Length: 90
Image 1: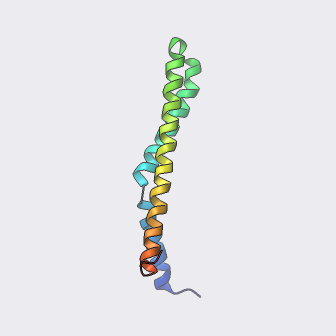
Image 2: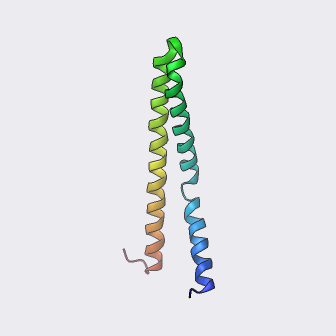
Image 3: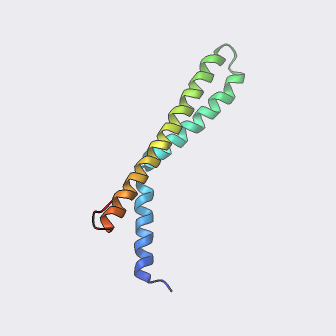
């Protein structure tokens, strides 16, 4: 059986780590969606199709870059927290 206090600590840590990089993740997700819509919409853009398509690809690239940055931030935060629990040893 698990200790109720341990379960509370785990839940608190999960909430804490979910908050790390949240803005970057949400902005990245939004840009990926926008990019996908723009790339799809480029087929219906007429004379502007090339510009709309390039804007879509740029939004996709920026969105994925933000999502990768958020992953990096969460991993770095997690390593620091585990190092604190281990007494500072890495």
